[in-house]
Image (cartoon, rainbow, N blue to C red; front, side, top):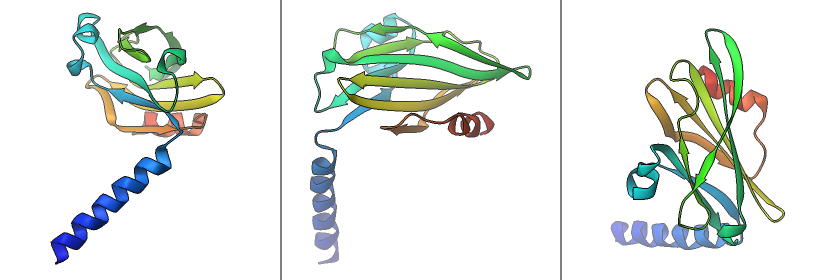
Length: 147
């Protein structure tokens, strides 16, 4: 009985989550392992437009914000479009040394979405990133740089 109740509650939650997210716009950050095209571009991250939008109309910008030897730097990054509409590959264009936060910001019509992921000598950490429909503050970036 308890297991049935748990399964029913989980199913109800998933059904409601789908309805809550319907009509939204989000950036999904992933690893390049699932995309042969991204691997060919030596991508370290993929980013995809998801939600109730036309993915081909999505525009995404990326920058790396970090500290190297105590000096704060911000680098504009180039995203490579992949064959899947609304999907892009990001190769490493920032120094391997230091701590970095990758800021991804996307628009689709009047909709806005953003993500922050940290990067360092050990690679890119998409698991502990942040995502939302607001522009992240400098305090958010600073907090991730200190982690």
